[in-house]
Length: 279
Image (cartoon, rainbow, N blue to C red):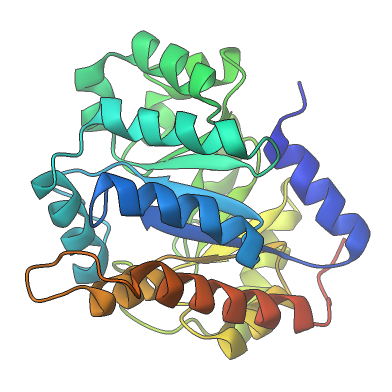
């Protein structure tokens, strides 16, 4: 079964360029602004959109994304509301792939079968659940694949050739390569190391490889895009959003514009890259 994610990466491969994958947290800073942002970023150049599922203990995330989860939860965001945001987005955008990213706990509480049914009907294309290892595939990964939802796995600098086949076994859509060890937004990736890692992963899979964690500028995005199939940007966008809020963390007239402008800048960087990725 071909998904929107599969189609989008095929389309971009034929154009000879990488995808810009953007991350924002659902409900941050409030449900209305969150939906406005989600609807605006594809036109600004986002090829795939990731929507964070707010959680009280996002252990793999740095301060920027942790705070975005807190703002969303404080504004009343729930899993049901996150799925409503996804549904509202899909009603006005039939083409852009939508990935929900987060942790297993909120999905488990919502109920796996119910979650997959509601996510699929809302137009969600893929899941990234950072705290479910391959050994737990029967919990969510295999049911998601059965439901026609891509399950996107993370590979890291510490995922060696012995571990990689297990990580890739039931992965679909794309592989998310975490370019640094540690939390999101903590450091800047080393382009040479990233290119070597992407090449190594590609020897094990035909799936596209998108690189995230630490990409903040158009220049960095361009360098990463030269050797990867996608560039994921999250902390930089969430930080820009935060900087646009008032002292009570409420949206201002410039919130959407600030984020959209940064997406456009990153998209120009990605599109300017000369592809050197090994096929």
